[in-house]
Image (cartoon, rainbow, N blue to C red):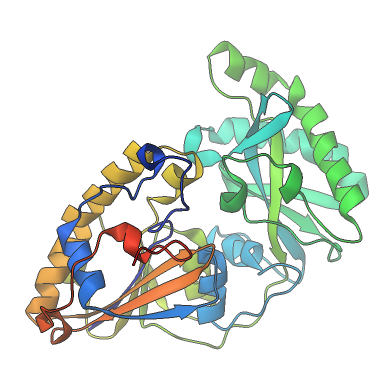
Length: 347
């Protein structure tokens, strides 16, 4: 049984100081053993979305077409329309910057989501734009024709100033103006006034990204997908693969999994990387060590699985292939995690 672990933000970017670098001093013995004994290769994909699309054979349009697959996974009919993710966000003013925070940092009820979307649709319906959502933190924008823009995935922008990440292309001025209109519409919206009175962050904008039309997917790179990630679920559905939510623990997965080629998406490190909270990143990695890496290392030693670990970063994706026999290569030194960070490896 082959197990592919896709782990975004396993190697976060270099921090300004050693104290703020999540990788500095972290010790996760099982993971370090797996990396040391594995054979490493590198591919160009520089984030989870591009890696998933490429492994499923989905070509880039203006963007990688993330939105239509997410639409499908959320139970909305994609049809032939052009879709964008238009996720609800909070923009915080810091000096002369607008810093984006996404849905992992706040809660939003279904009623609030419906109310805000109704206001947007009332305003933009004459422009041929239609907002919709079946999940309060995942909004979509349906268009009659493809816009002449390219966009940045929300996790590349989260925690940063939006200025250099805004939509780019021949129609960029129209889309930047649209984002400004959304901000003005939501600024004094009753939902946001109530949220602020409760001490909650107002939903004062949306972030358009991942646009495209739904392509045909013929690649079946796995037999089963285990993920809470909506894109991974949508790609599995489109290619008619079995897919389930990610279990809480490797033991639960091993008890359920059958022979074949499995993809598991472990994505809990991402938000802590975006917002510069190294202590939270380390806590979550230590949880992964106990819940996933240590049990999978034991299963590997017993010959129950083969393991391939994929770690996307801004410098490309590192893939480590580990077999039962490779664990016997005791002469391979167990390096600190910082040694493996692409573009910043220690020697």
